[in-house]
Image (tube, rainbow, N blue to C red; front, side):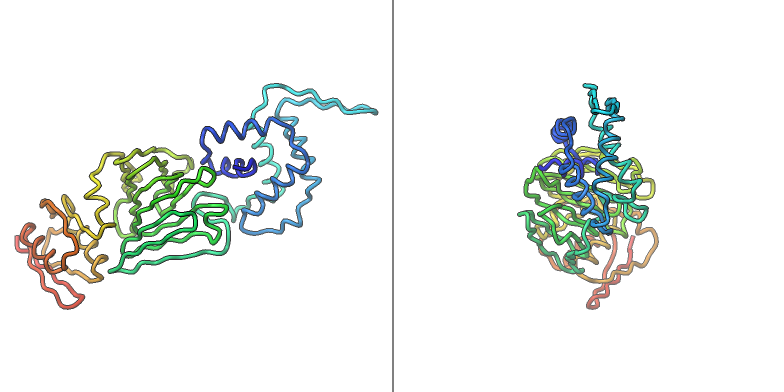
Length: 345
């Protein structure tokens, strides 16, 4: 990874320990004018707007170098003949970065109140959008070699430069990601409630707007997860294979546990598994899966949970409803895309 990109990722707090060590080694060396200007231009280009040609490069470079010196243990004295600089060996990369940011922010060159660089926002205007409507599932092959399987009623959005200078995807709905490994470009998936960071792995993200919870389940590799609404903006949970995190949206409380892949990930293989699932969630899943509208008559259906076992693989909606109805206690009537469920218990 280029050194300038290390600072870029440091600002977003997604550097690995190895990258932090590399960043420190680079920052404790002298920053010449050309390197500093190149760094500023690189950071500037990653913002949404602004005119890079308006930057006072020489003036800003001088200020940065002076600020780094004063905050990092340099003592500067001027005489008529020469300038003497004494370096304190206790250099600190965090102080240097803070110095750079303080000046750039003050100058208005890097971040404005309307343009905060976060994991949630893409960096370039050109966006690519992939939608999967109700009743369908689809697969998207990305430029970097990664693959995304989209569940019904799901949308992903990513930058047109995806795979070149970033690997960021915004998700609405549910998708399974098979991520090609790239040490230089972390793969980041942002939904309304959760953010996942990986290098090379496979995981499932479910975050539908009409559901009470959001979840991330890891199949292979390792990932870091944080809440999108977490004000500290730091990754909080690490997942290993067959571990998942479930976030309750209302309380923003989350928990980590193991999961059974055949239950959580079966949808990507065109199989539905409703074991220990509430009737309310089953209905939402069937509506998306078969592109129908389901109405329930009777009280207490929110408390009904399917306690049967097994999965429904490529079965008709009628067969699924008959099986569920026998176990849970309801009758169903199908009229094209309109389904009526009547509770019998």
